[in-house]
Length: 146
Image 1: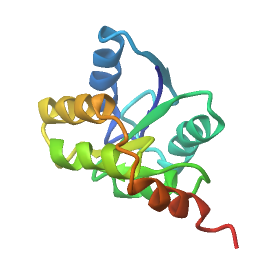
Image 2: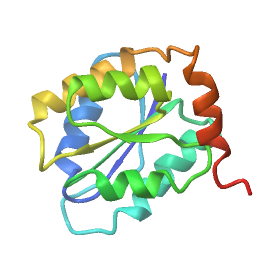
Image 3: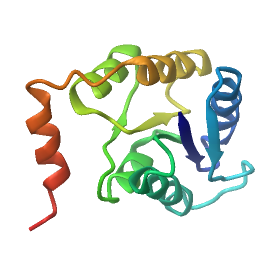
């Protein structure tokens, strides 16, 4: 599985930690920046990761910022992206199982690094349940088509 990853300056250290963990787990990671903790505008980097997921060049993506809110908003501007902001393992499980989330947003200033890794692990390992959720996901994907 190829995973896109991107962050702003506030999420840079967690991005590095998570990317290294993903590589250790055998995942192919495509890093879209930023490459330092110097202040940047997060949409510039989040957009690239979200586009890679929407285009299918990456299977899923992870975006990080201080709270993760702006990053999720930016990613969700891209058609075909279902970015979910998760703050614990259960929110990550439900994001995948019920919403078929293909991008995960994390707030580096709001959760400890070890919890971030646990969230990523659950999010990656949880399959989409399908069933009654399929119609809802299709409706989400169709929003904005009018």
